[in-house]
Length: 443
Image (tube, rainbow, N blue to C red):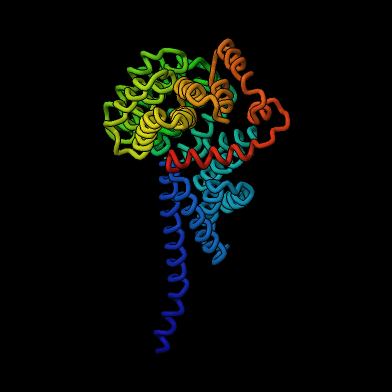
C-alpha cells in the first residue's frame, strides 16, 4: 500500500499536466471552429465560440501560470480576445505570450497577432514593425497566411498595390482558409483607390471562386461602393459576366439582379429588364425578388389599370413567395376598390391611397384622386384628393392647374390647413374619413 501511495503521488503531476494539455487542446479546437464560422459570415455563432475559448484559455492559464503550456494558453486567449474586439486585453495576453515563448516559432506567431492588434488599434507603423519581424522568423501555414494578409493590407493602405497584391497572393497560397479574405481585400482596396482595372481583376477572381458565392453579401457591399464611386454603368459593365460565374445559382442571381438595378438607374431600361428577366426565369427567393423588381418597374410609370394587370402577370409564377403574394393581394384590392368606385366614389379614394402608398404607382394614384374629386366634388374630402394629386404630380404646369381647381374649395379645412391657417373641423373630417375607408377596405 505504501508503494502504491508513492506511485500515485508521483503520477499526480503527470495526470494534472495531461488534463491541462487536454483543456488547451479542446479550446484550440473550439477556436478553429470559431474561425470557420467567422469566415463563413456566422458572426454571432463565432462570437459565442470565441467567448468560450476566452473562458477556457483563461481558466487554463490561471490553473498553472508557470507551467509548460502557459504560453499556449496566453496565445490562444489573445487571439480569441482579438476576434472579439477586446484589443487591450488581447495585447496584454499576446505580449505575455511573446515574453514566455520558448522558441523562435512561438515568438514569431505571437508577433503576427500582436501586429494585427496594433493594426486594429490604428497603430500602422507598429503593426508594420511587428509583422516584418514575424516574417523573418519561422512561421507555419496559419500564422504565415495571417502575416501576409496583414502585410498586404498595410501595403494597400499605403497605395503600394503591387506589393499589397503580392502579399495577398502569398496569404492565399499559405492557407486556403484566408483565400476569400485576401480576395475581399483586393476588391476593397481597388475600389477605394478608384482603380477600375484592378477592380475588374479582383471581381473576376472572386467570381471564379465558388466559395465566394457563399459570402455574396460581402461582395455586393463592395460592388455597391464601387457604383457610388463611379457611374453605375461602369460597374454594370464589370458585372456583365456575373451570370456565368462559378457561384451557386442563388448567389449568381443576386449579383445579376444588382447589375439590373444599376442599368435601370442609368436609364437602360431595356438592358435592366433583360437582366432581371434572366434572373426571374430561375427558382427560389432570388427569382421571386426579380419578379418583384420587374413588377415595381412596371407599376412605377403605370398610367392605367392595364399596366397594373401586366404587373400581376409577372408576379403570378412566384405567388408562393410571401412578398409576391402580398403585392398580388394589393393588386386584387386595387381592382376591387376601382369597381366599388363606380357606385361609391370613395372607393376611388381608397384605390388612390393604395396605389400611392403600397404600389408606389404615382400616376395611377393621381388618376384615382382626380376621379374621386370629379365624381364626388361636393364631398368634404374632394379638396384632400386634389391636394394629394398635387403631391404626386411631377409637372409644374400640372400642379399649377390643380391649385387653380382648389380655388373652388378655399373654405375647406384641408386647404386652410395646407396654407398654415386655422382649420376648424379638420380632425373631425379625418376621423370620419378613416371610418368610411375602413368600411370600404375592411382594414
